[in-house]
Amino acid sequence: MKIFANKDIKTLFLAISAVMAIFLLLSQFLLRLLYKEISLPLLLLSLLSAGSVLAVCFWYFKKQDKIMEAAVSQITSYLNGDTDARIDCDKEGEIYRLFHSVNTLAAVLNSHAEDEFKTKEFLKNTISDISHQLKTPLAALNIYNGLLQDEVRDMPSIKEFTELSEAELDRIETLIQNLLKIAKLDAGSIVLEKTSENVADIMKDVELHFAYRAKQEQKKIVLSGAGDIFFLCDRDWVMEAIDNIVKNALDHTKQGDTVHIEWTQSPGLVRVIVKDNGSGIHPEDLHHIFKRFYRSRFSKNTQGIGLGLPLAKAIIEAHGGTIEVDSEPGTGTAFVINFLIPTKL
Image (cartoon, rainbow, N blue to C red; front, side, top):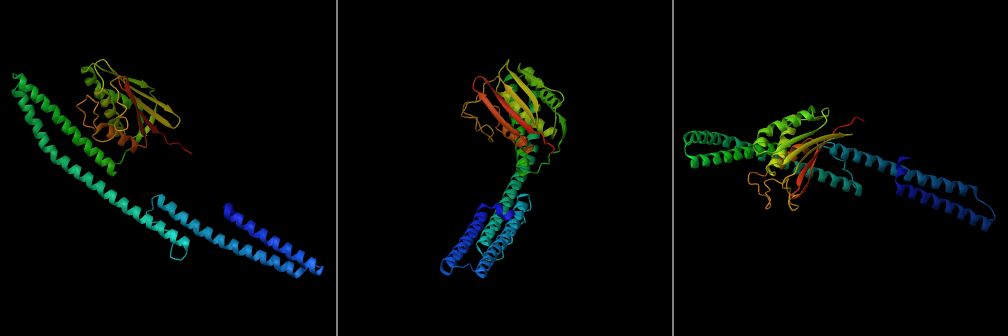
């Protein structure tokens, strides 16, 4: 039976049965030794007593088992998302003290979760407000800078400064947009609209995004993978993630280097690998590259703002995927992205 699945309860019942059997045998042995006969009434009374003790124990443990089943049911409901689920603990006893502690823990967890949600909402709203407030003066600065570039075409030194200021304005705009995206992902306010997408088509669009830059910097982007691999994803967000990883690869390669984008499929998994033969990542930095605003003391790249890789990681994890990095200084870097494919049981 179910209660006997518990080894301790099973051992207890066996011990009680053994004690009763020994008592019965010893009592009959003494009667036989002293009075030369066996008492049938005493035998029946002993068997009745033993059966009663076992029945009472069985009833008690059966009742405790029902109480525990009810408690497990409430805990399972809580773990499945019912934050109002609680265990009945309005009686006295050690087990009900335990249930009360579990209910208290659930209440504390709910409070912490609510505080965290409010904090993330506040952060998201604050960054969103700041972003919107910055867009107007940033647009104005871009216009003024464009006007200056038109006026100083015959003044090389000033024209150089206007081009540098344009690059810095672009960096500010990218920083604002990435901060806003990360804040929304953190707050869980973005609903991913997943559809079945062709991996090859996504990677071709990624290549197209960087084709002009790669040509200007005399670098190559090479695609490699089957054309019939599909998986469920939000196309725009996945492209955002891959774009940031490819951009990172281009930032850390030099003229003549190559960025490879490969994709494969195995049972239950779609894997995308972005690798380059660039400068690589120092071992000291490998455990920190997905931290926001992290800048390596070994990196010669001064253009990054330290948000591209954290944003890519957040997007990939929002899709239930994982991202890993393998790198060797002077040899190159490989980012390995795994997307799970749900299987039907």
